[in-house]
Image (cartoon, rainbow, N blue to C red; front, side):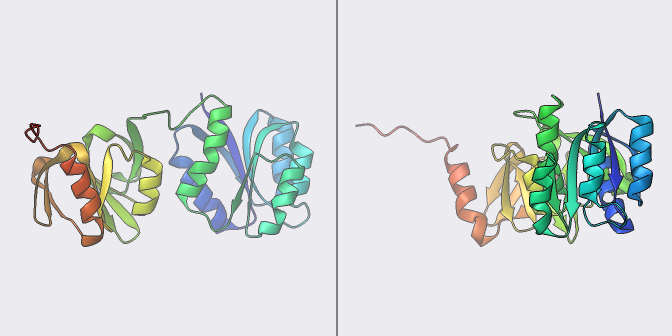
Length: 244
């Protein structure tokens, strides 16, 4: 089951960003995008069956609040996207499901969508989820399913991250901070450097400032993350029991 959604915004760049974010989430199905609220209104009334509408507030002729009031019987969920926090009260008054203050990144978008996914009983991140979909830059932005157990490390490269697995690498447009928030599995992954996050299960050895990982890759431990990593490793070190 997919959540059928439309995007209404008179800003072309905003539509492009939201469209990209939607395509990163297999639970969402984008039906149409609209630059004009009147066109969107007609489409919703003609087609019906819209699960989710992303709508900008500040638009000409019909603004987002007015549009939401007109289509609320045809759309299950509404998320306002706006550059002005003052519209938050308006969103509340029309019973909007969510509110995204521009500019927002994918991690913020993802968190807001969890409210709808839970309500729709389509949960993107189930408890202890063991996989994630990656929009791979190396494979013409194809969505690739990667299991957490296969991830050796995440490496930050400016506005991209490279996901290292034992056999392959995938590069995607995402910051390391966003990736950490989306994975949300501190039991599996630990940050060892401002540019590196590694899988605890794939750490083969640690010597000085260097971690050796499954498959032979090596990563540097920075001073600011050293103590936390040492605490994790030391908690698993085999030691003889102290005799009383």
